[in-house]
Length: 484
Length: 95
Image (cartoon, rainbow over all chains, first blue to last red; front, side, top):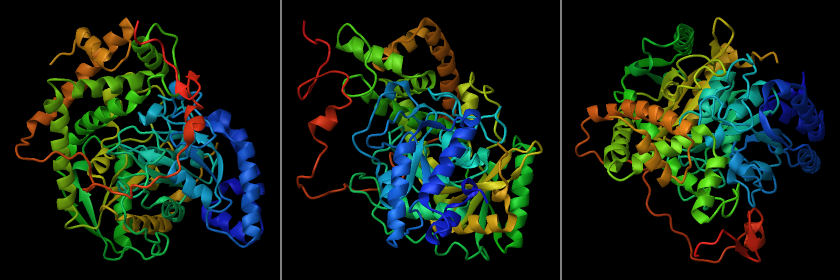
């Protein structure tokens, strides 16, 4: 078996049993990155020296008998996570030269367990996009078909797992940015409940929706990663002070008697026939495993995209006000202070970021605040209430992740509204603040991965991981690899 | 509704963005389409509905008012585009 094909738990067994060292594993990953990176473009920055040094340190820990499931495992993280001393761009020219003075809590937790950082992954600029085409560092390509998008905004995080350039990765999800690329690239992706993982040191897009989560080869790896990064952080006052369960422990307990809801608004006429077929097959699989299905309704689903593009852009316009050329990032030559702000921002931001700042500024501007922003916050309440009502009668919900498999690079780039509508099944989860898992559920006729979404109750990650694991073991879809 | 180039110019000023003529025209059309789509929220009666700003209900997060280590001026200024001693420098504000 190739080292780069391994899961976290397989590599951990090899490291613990001394069949392999972390330095050997890290070298194998760096070679793999070099071999496939020209075709995929998953990375913005590769950090070979730091990686090898961290691997050597991990080998010493393992020799001392300290071998946590993540010790010595080569990972990569989205370039939205601050990494002390390592350039962090967030996919933007405005941060092209930015070297953070501190690290994100989620990455620090992995690093402290001895995980090895291979580099920083490509993404849509400031996590604004569904295709990775808004990155200032070039589009990432889908390892299953390099003429197609990998999804976004954590497109590099999904492509790197699918192209086996990292054993696992971290991404962020504001409206589907972990789940949609995981679905398009045939890997497992988890958006935890809002507040489950610290956002400290994660460059902010829409603060009430952003959440950190793992992208992995299987559900067991996803559980290991979540267990490592979850928990209260005094540096993020919105992180929730609740005990972190052992997510791996109950993963194999099966789905007998599990009540799965099928929200009728997610099985619409316009759904791609291959996606519909994969969902039908998944339902049949769960039935055979002893789960029960319940027809449910989330009546305000059709209003979620409109709500999201008001709430998220309003928060973004405020969050991105900090890029003004004063303290860090790009500073333009200018005549006077106001001119410096304006020129620095206009030169540094790409088109999609400017568009969303404009949308958010308009929605918050005098005379429109109540009509747009407050109205959207009220509809957000209705969408949350839909989930609360439906979860009274079911344990999890099963839906598609995306209405179609990965689309072609360039296909939707000139029509932002069509691009936004591709997130229709993922956005409601962020608005409701709950958790959801995307996992491989088969392929289209042309061989493109199709993802299944399991939506859990708030802090119900254990249940969706258990349900995901049961499906994966029954079908084996996650073991098919992209030929790249 | 109809978003004009003049509206775009007004919003761009608020957002501290300097757009080209091409960008202004493009954004006017795209913002018009997006805000046209967003109009559908008006179909819903939200009388008496409390707005949600955060999905997880939370009280204030208090902590001890104790001095903690901080990154200090050197690290804080390491990315400064312009500095003088322990200060950021910017173009002249007052003539």
